[in-house]
Image (cartoon, rainbow, N blue to C red):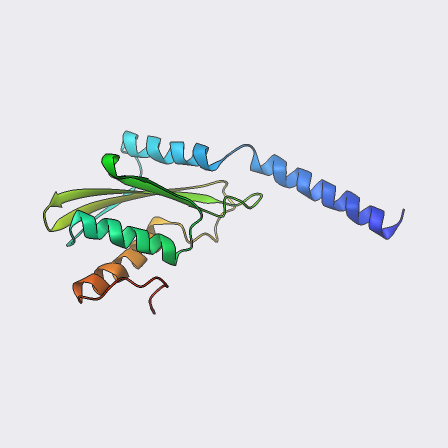
Length: 155
Protein backbone atom coordinates (compact mmCIF):
# COMPACT_ATOMS: atom_id res chain seq x y z
CA UNK A 1 0.00 0.00 0.00
CA UNK A 2 1.23 3.45 -0.94
CA UNK A 3 2.05 6.10 1.68
CA UNK A 4 -0.62 8.51 0.37
CA UNK A 5 -3.29 5.80 0.39
CA UNK A 6 -2.36 4.81 3.94
CA UNK A 7 -2.63 8.45 5.08
CA UNK A 8 -6.08 8.78 3.49
CA UNK A 9 -7.31 5.66 5.31
CA UNK A 10 -5.83 6.86 8.57
CA UNK A 11 -7.52 10.25 8.17
CA UNK A 12 -10.88 8.59 7.49
CA UNK A 13 -10.45 6.37 10.56
CA UNK A 14 -9.55 9.31 12.80
CA UNK A 15 -12.54 11.33 11.56
CA UNK A 16 -14.85 8.36 12.16
CA UNK A 17 -13.59 7.98 15.74
CA UNK A 18 -14.03 11.71 16.36
CA UNK A 19 -17.58 11.62 15.05
CA UNK A 20 -18.44 8.59 17.20
CA UNK A 21 -17.05 10.16 20.37
CA UNK A 22 -18.78 13.42 19.53
CA UNK A 23 -22.24 11.95 19.18
CA UNK A 24 -24.90 14.38 18.11
CA UNK A 25 -24.47 17.00 20.81
CA UNK A 26 -25.06 20.40 19.24
CA UNK A 27 -25.07 23.91 20.64
CA UNK A 28 -28.86 23.68 20.81
CA UNK A 29 -28.64 20.46 22.85
CA UNK A 30 -26.13 21.99 25.26
CA UNK A 31 -28.14 25.22 25.47
CA UNK A 32 -31.24 23.22 26.33
CA UNK A 33 -29.26 21.33 28.99
CA UNK A 34 -28.04 24.60 30.51
CA UNK A 35 -31.60 25.98 30.60
CA UNK A 36 -32.91 22.78 32.19
CA UNK A 37 -30.19 22.93 34.84
CA UNK A 38 -31.26 26.48 35.66
CA UNK A 39 -34.93 25.47 35.89
CA UNK A 40 -34.07 22.56 38.17
CA UNK A 41 -32.00 24.81 40.45
CA UNK A 42 -29.41 22.03 40.87
CA UNK A 43 -26.48 23.68 39.16
CA UNK A 44 -24.94 27.06 38.70
CA UNK A 45 -22.67 29.47 40.46
CA UNK A 46 -24.48 32.54 41.79
CA UNK A 47 -22.90 35.83 42.87
CA UNK A 48 -24.22 39.32 43.55
CA UNK A 49 -22.37 42.38 42.26
CA UNK A 50 -22.76 46.10 43.08
CA UNK A 51 -23.78 47.07 39.53
CA UNK A 52 -27.13 47.82 37.92
CA UNK A 53 -28.73 45.20 35.69
CA UNK A 54 -27.90 47.29 32.59
CA UNK A 55 -24.26 47.50 33.66
CA UNK A 56 -24.24 43.73 34.24
CA UNK A 57 -25.54 43.17 30.69
CA UNK A 58 -22.84 45.47 29.29
CA UNK A 59 -20.11 43.73 31.26
CA UNK A 60 -21.39 40.28 30.25
CA UNK A 61 -21.29 41.27 26.57
CA UNK A 62 -17.76 42.60 27.03
CA UNK A 63 -16.66 39.38 28.73
CA UNK A 64 -17.99 37.36 25.79
CA UNK A 65 -15.99 39.57 23.41
CA UNK A 66 -12.88 39.18 25.55
CA UNK A 67 -13.32 35.41 25.60
CA UNK A 68 -13.93 35.40 21.82
CA UNK A 69 -17.04 33.27 22.08
CA UNK A 70 -18.70 31.94 18.93
CA UNK A 71 -22.41 32.62 19.03
CA UNK A 72 -24.44 34.70 21.49
CA UNK A 73 -28.17 34.30 22.07
CA UNK A 74 -29.57 37.17 24.10
CA UNK A 75 -32.90 36.71 25.92
CA UNK A 76 -33.32 39.96 27.87
CA UNK A 77 -37.02 39.42 28.57
CA UNK A 78 -36.17 36.12 30.29
CA UNK A 79 -33.04 37.67 31.91
CA UNK A 80 -30.45 35.37 30.37
CA UNK A 81 -27.86 35.09 27.63
CA UNK A 82 -26.20 31.97 26.24
CA UNK A 83 -22.96 31.74 24.33
CA UNK A 84 -20.74 29.01 22.96
CA UNK A 85 -17.10 28.41 22.27
CA UNK A 86 -15.40 25.78 20.16
CA UNK A 87 -18.67 24.31 18.89
CA UNK A 88 -17.36 24.21 15.32
CA UNK A 89 -14.58 21.84 16.31
CA UNK A 90 -15.16 18.13 15.95
CA UNK A 91 -15.12 16.92 19.55
CA UNK A 92 -14.75 20.06 21.64
CA UNK A 93 -17.16 22.82 22.55
CA UNK A 94 -18.84 24.46 25.50
CA UNK A 95 -21.96 26.45 26.20
CA UNK A 96 -22.30 29.00 29.00
CA UNK A 97 -25.53 30.56 30.23
CA UNK A 98 -25.65 33.71 32.36
CA UNK A 99 -28.82 34.77 34.19
CA UNK A 100 -28.81 38.49 35.04
CA UNK A 101 -31.40 39.42 37.67
CA UNK A 102 -31.68 42.75 39.48
CA UNK A 103 -31.67 42.50 43.27
CA UNK A 104 -32.37 46.22 43.55
CA UNK A 105 -31.41 49.34 41.60
CA UNK A 106 -27.70 49.05 42.47
CA UNK A 107 -27.11 45.30 42.81
CA UNK A 108 -27.47 42.41 40.38
CA UNK A 109 -27.44 38.65 40.89
CA UNK A 110 -25.72 36.54 38.25
CA UNK A 111 -26.05 32.79 37.92
CA UNK A 112 -23.64 31.06 35.55
CA UNK A 113 -23.99 27.50 34.24
CA UNK A 114 -21.71 25.81 31.72
CA UNK A 115 -21.84 22.51 29.86
CA UNK A 116 -19.15 20.86 27.77
CA UNK A 117 -19.79 18.78 24.67
CA UNK A 118 -17.87 15.96 26.31
CA UNK A 119 -15.73 15.20 29.35
CA UNK A 120 -12.52 15.86 27.42
CA UNK A 121 -13.15 19.62 27.18
CA UNK A 122 -10.76 20.53 29.98
CA UNK A 123 -9.00 23.34 28.12
CA UNK A 124 -12.05 25.58 27.70
CA UNK A 125 -12.14 29.01 29.28
CA UNK A 126 -15.92 29.05 29.04
CA UNK A 127 -16.46 28.16 32.70
CA UNK A 128 -18.13 30.00 35.59
CA UNK A 129 -14.78 30.72 37.25
CA UNK A 130 -13.26 32.22 34.08
CA UNK A 131 -16.44 34.20 33.42
CA UNK A 132 -16.53 35.62 36.94
CA UNK A 133 -12.83 36.50 36.89
CA UNK A 134 -13.38 38.55 33.72
CA UNK A 135 -16.69 39.95 34.98
CA UNK A 136 -14.98 41.25 38.11
CA UNK A 137 -12.43 43.04 35.91
CA UNK A 138 -15.37 44.65 34.10
CA UNK A 139 -16.96 45.72 37.39
CA UNK A 140 -13.67 47.29 38.44
CA UNK A 141 -13.38 49.16 35.12
CA UNK A 142 -16.91 50.55 35.41
CA UNK A 143 -16.49 51.48 39.08
CA UNK A 144 -13.43 53.54 38.09
CA UNK A 145 -15.56 55.46 35.58
CA UNK A 146 -13.89 53.99 32.51
CA UNK A 147 -15.42 52.45 29.39
CA UNK A 148 -15.27 48.71 28.86
CA UNK A 149 -12.55 47.97 26.30
CA UNK A 150 -13.16 45.91 23.18
CA UNK A 151 -10.02 43.85 23.80
CA UNK A 152 -9.37 42.00 27.07
CA UNK A 153 -7.87 44.25 29.75
CA UNK A 154 -4.47 43.53 31.17
CA UNK A 155 -4.65 41.19 34.13
